[in-house]
Length: 463
Image (cartoon, rainbow, N blue to C red; front, side, top):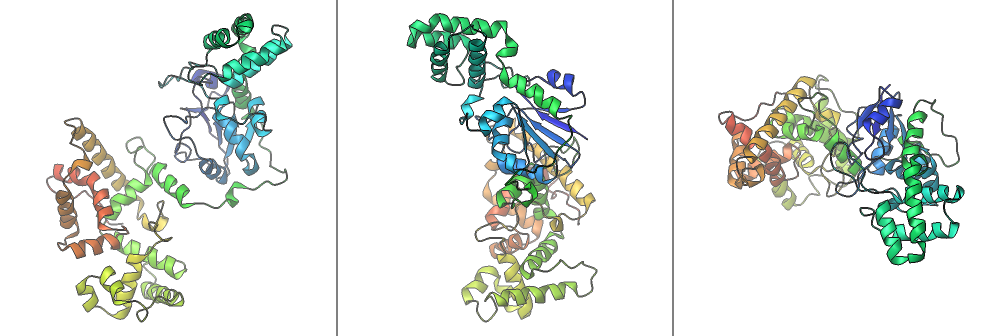
């Protein structure tokens, strides 16, 4: 069992480890972080802090994806409280007063928990969140250190400040400017906060409570309207995010290489990828289980099943116009080969999972090949990235995007062993690219690696 804790300004790593000494401490959560985790039913993810300003925040679908793995997900205090208030119907657990206020509608603004902090690894907090101001005022009024009417005035003054400027000193200054009669009350509130840190930092209190909650037994959700996360439909966006952020191979050497990075590499360079992709596309067109290469006439049966499925949808050799054949097939392919081969080739090259979409969004198991080839491809991608970083340090225009288009196209022509533009486009489509331009954009990342290796193409074992 592993407990993953995403914290930043609310708690330090030392605070977390003092309560849960075996927890894995992460930076404030951001888009993609949860998808990169390898969690299961025995694991727990606790979200306290998250980013949302300079970097995209964690999406709801990402949390639902983790919940669908049967992983326990708890939220509290800050970003965690926000997401738990929105996702408790799907199984996310919320802990603490901040979560309760959001869930009951007493709070409705992200700014209530937002703070300014240093971007360093410590994420030291520089400002005071509005929800802490609320709680401090409430405690000061309860303790007779502040009059109720002054509390309302001070809260309004705090609201006028942007979250990046809101501090106790700024609240005092703003109150003196806007509400001079409450200036002494503002000073008294600041002093109360300094004397009673335990009564002025609600976010920290909730975060520590959530850490303790991680050790309590998990209970099954039984409230009305509960929808298990695994019943929530996946979207192409989630699939794309999973492929983009999930590490292709979980080791330090290639930690930054994602599954889609490796799949793109194999699309370009694996000799057997066109065959893999052909079977993948025909299987989905036919709507039947994919046949194993050892299944005798498996491919022949698969082709016939795909042609029959296409015919039921009105796509056949007799219904397709001449422009379709000339668009998807080269002149030589239109002249040679039998009717089944020509039509199946056209179906594969025109295959999409949805109109206007790419054929796949993550890294389908059918396209991955062997584990050995997958790991070797991940090593090649990592090597290319290291080389590109070294080249970028030698000059502003020494990056893959600055490579001349003819050089990139020559790289593909040499790699695939074809010359004519029509043939290049056909090979790109056979490898699952939407167009030759998409293949060229993907290849830019690896051109420098090839040239550095003596004008040889990057190694990509058959899979």
